[in-house]
Length: 134
Image 1 (cartoon, rainbow, N blue to C red):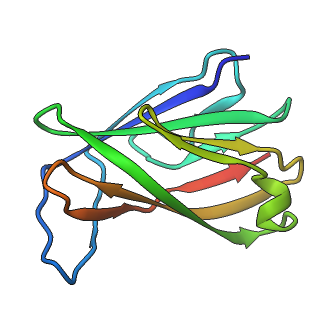
Image 2 (image 1 turned 60 degrees about the vertical axis):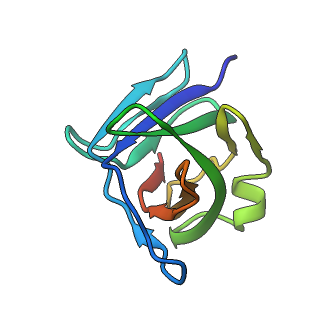
């Protein structure tokens, strides 16, 4: 099954050399592609995964001008329930299309995650949504 597509839009940003900014998305487009994934609530940037696993989630980010921001890393922190992060999310692949993460956690659990992004000027930012498995 193709990956679910999660495309965040962020405002254009600039960070100093020693600073990574927390970026709050201004928009989200979710294309499930047959996967059991949804926004946690209208206007939310958090995700809910339910049912059949694994669910592959491909993240991409553009800024308000339409320029692509590279997704250069991810950090995942368990919030409630679940097993180890390595068991819950066994693979993460970064390529030109963004970052694809395999969600393989069958438990009712929540994970906070940080997407590290970089704009065309090299400035770094963090997007901080939540994934809840049901």
